Structure formats: C-alpha cells, structure tokens
Length: 168
Image (cartoon, rainbow, N blue to C red; front, side, top):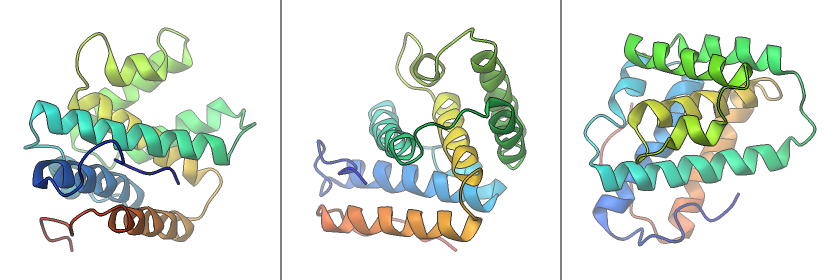
C-alpha cells in the first residue's frame, strides 16, 4: 500500500479523523453497513473531504496496481450496483448514476469523483463503492477485510493517531 495520507500531518486531529473516516467508509461498503456508510463523511468539512478523497484515491490506485488487466466492465457495473444498494438512498442513486455515466463513456472516474469543483460526498461515495466492488470481483469479503486491516495498520506506522471515534 502507498503511504496513505503521508503528505498530511497525521498528528493533526482533523487530518487524522478524515483519514480514518475514508478508511472506515471502505470498510462500511465492504461489510454493507448502511448506517456507517451514511455517517462516515456526514460531518466532515470541505478540507477534510479533500483529505478523505486523497486517501480513497490512493487506495483506488493501489487496487488498480494490484489487479492490472481487469476487463470485465459488466461484472463491475453489477458489483457496484450491489455494493451501492447498501448505501442510504441518496448515495445509492448518486453512485449508480455515476457508474452508468462511466460505463457509457460520458465521464471518467476522476471527473465523477472530483468534477470541476472540490470533491463532494457523493463523489467520494462513488469512489469507495467502485473500489469495493472492484475488490469483490477478485477477493473474498474476508480477504478484503484483511486488506483494510493492513491499510489501517499503515496509518499507525505513519504516525497517525488512533481513531477519534468508536466503531462497532
């Protein structure tokens, strides 16, 4: 894994929270935890959303590097639909709409996540759901959880603080 958040000061509580929220958003999509999916980015401010977006983008890039050569876009589209179904309705709609635009060639993943403005919550949900769906095509849910556990360990190795909130 790349050094998630290494360009940011992980000892800054606001950065630390954004990094953990992004990490746990991936975990929430992987475990299909609707309440957690809806809550992880809900109260982050614009700069924190940007930092969370950096983490999700780095994770996506790592996933793409691990699984180069993947070509089955129809399976991925169905996988994103299944993963997005676990999200609250507003994010489920945003994610499935965005992925269809991507499949039709109307936008790139970067445009869907970032657009012309700062990263939005819907864009970050799209990237998280897309990443988890991509992983589910190659790995079991248990292996994905192990991968996310290792990514969480990296946060600690890089000097990050513990999660500033509890998870169940």
